[in-house]
Length: 67
Image (cartoon, rainbow, N blue to C red):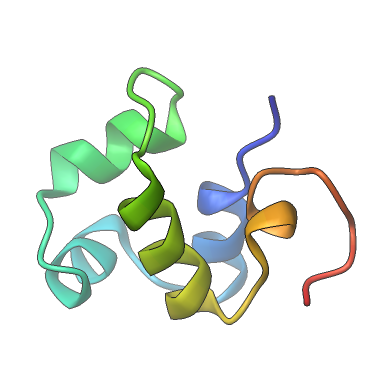
């Protein structure tokens, strides 16, 4: 599975801490999502997609089209 969270975050120069604060999450949780140690639930996936302005399919690596 390709999960593009880390790629999107780095591309936009956003730290794990800033993302965690912006989405009211823990930085450790963001790290675990990025390292595929934990899977995000649907509502969290939607938060990430909305935050970065991309589709869920792009976030999950199902397409190369951001929207």
